[in-house]
Image (cartoon, rainbow, N blue to C red; front, side, top):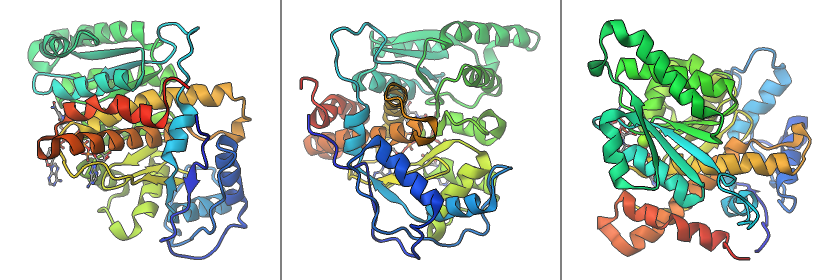
Amino acid sequence: MSRPTGAWRHQPQHRGRMWAASPFFRRQLVLLRSLLPQSPPPSSVAGCRFAHLSSPSGTSGSLRAARAMAAATVYEADAEAVVRRITPPLDRARHKGQAGKIAVIGGCREYTGAPYFAAISALKVGADLSHVFCTKDAATVIKSYSPELIVHPILEESYSVRDDERASVSSKILTEVAKWMERFDCIVVGPGLGRDSFLLDCVSNIMKHARQANIPTVVDGDGLFLITNNLGLVEGNPLAILTPNVYEYKRLVQKVLNCDVNEETASEQLMELCHKIGGVTIMQKGKADVICDGKTVTQVSTFGSPRRCGGQGDILSGSVAVFTSWAQHFILSNEQPTEKRVNPTTLGCIAGSLLLRKAASLAFEKNKRSTVTTDIIEFLGKSLEDICPAEH
Ligand SMILES: NC(=O)C1=CN([C@@H]2O[C@H](COP(=O)(O)OP(=O)(O)OC[C@H]3O[C@@H](n4cnc5c(N)ncnc54)[C@H](O)[C@@H]3O)[C@@H](O)[C@H]2O)[C@@H](O)CC1
Ligand SMILES: Nc1ncnc2c1ncn2[C@@H]1O[C@H](COP(=O)(O)OP(=O)(O)OP(=O)(O)O)[C@@H](O)[C@H]1O
Ligand SMILES: [Mg+2]
């Protein structure tokens, strides 16, 4: 297996003044290098407007300023190096479950494809077990797509629950999910969840439980609708990963920052959003997937495919879940001092983004205009194999 040549490369097109002497910047470099020792330092870092940025209370002015300046520069991740580094070897001594147990909370009457795409992608990337918690209506359909998935038909929508039963049904749902929660390495909340108010209340309880249990949580699709209207569910949670598409991002910015998306100051705005929500990692999906954890802004811009068929975000959420759990294990087992650790959430986003893009590219090469999401899923395995061969 070839060794990584560096995890983060500097994007030269960014403007501004040098601030490489900043202690915060130096600390960031140490963080990045500690993960991938051969990583060359960025040649320059640009600063720009930051006075308007807010940050969690207690943050000193200089740290706030340094963070804001860091936001001005977007680093292109050496995503292949990240994938190689965090993907665990296929060790014959391992038993079932050690490569990851993922759960997707989603699937209702309208949407059965999205939770399936997310859950099956988690398996195809390399997780050992993939669960789906969905409504009864969706469960049989999802099971029929694949016998590989473990499907729990436990969620309920308002139409199927009488008003006087709500409290007891809600607590039963939480008890049922809680039984499983500790086993999961990461959960994905939202693909195909729908927007029924009772169902979303139940999912809020599940998210609170996951947070107490320190389970990394990818929030996507209707999960983003839920948290945009209830930010407390993710505020200050370093294990929360938000993966908004262009519309979901717009709604988040409007709600949290009370303004519109500004392309001119995109990275500063993303950093500001992270700080306002506090501690979370955000991957803003688009032409490039831009990832911010409140400290650094990195992007993955490897070209994928010109097809924009629905469901690619679902593949991404399932893949990010697996890579985040792998990154967590990688970081913990490499015994780095806490202050030197790079966020597993950031690494998970970088790796998930690259893999989806590679798979989309291969699928498009084969299927051209008829490329659909299932075609892309078929290429997840080859994409990972090309970067990180199973036998080495
Ligand atoms: N096969 C499936 O079952 C799929 C289900 N999906 C699920 O569908 C649900 C809804 O997700 P969507 O991404 O469709 O979200 P939205 O319901 O927010 O958006 C629906 C569509 O409306 C348009 N739109 C939304 N806001 C807009 C705005 N401000 N300006 C202009 N156009 C706007 C966009 O074309 C968008 O794709 C989620 O649960 C998602 O996971 C998707 O993941 C796609 C695949
Ligand atoms: N303009 C673009 N150019 C190239 N790739 C893109 C573009 N927009 C999105 N993508 C790719 O598609 C992935 C999913 O992003 P997208 O915006 O389609 O998510 P989504 O709307 O949540 O998807 P879903 O239909 O699953 O809900 C991104 O991670 C990126 O790889
Ligand atoms: Mg989506």
